[in-house]
Image 1 (tube, rainbow over the protein chains, first blue to last red):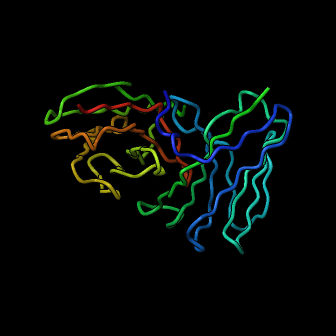
Image 2 (spheres, rainbow over the protein chains, first blue to last red):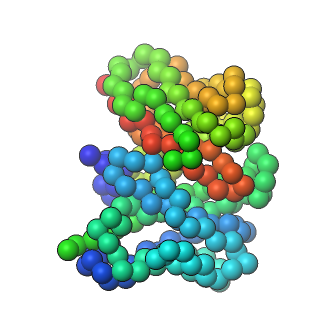
Length: 116
Length: 110
């Protein structure tokens, strides 16, 4: 089973509804952010990213919103499907864009449960 | 999966024994990372590599060592496993600022 998610906040949504998952990031100097999806027993999977010079970026059924004023990131999933059930977490690049010092800091995540 | 494999995928070992986890990538990425994932924590960086024989410590490196003798392989060694090292271990590669992860290794230290 998935032991990593035992203490995670959980968002429960009905199939077909829209989901909004939030993330507060820590470093006001961070300029690159990523959302990952992690299904039970699997590695984190890249979903979408955004740079700090953007407020919004859209992908297929997903939208990421960035509010730098309050250091907040959100992931919106349209028409949520059972296959979207997973843990979602954000990551921020707290260092330089390139070179050895470029590193990601990861949030603890939110579990999304899709009910039929 | 960014061409990343990890082995073994599951391992049970006893306290005090050495353990080596392997990360293999097929796309010639320069940067490779080892993380551990535990309940209540985000992914935490153990060690990383920025080229063959070039490695550095992350935030939770105590009790771990790494080696990278060729571009495609990054090994993580627990010299003497402890119960606190029971975890799920992920390898990642980096392209630009984005990191892509392998499938993970579940390690149980009894």
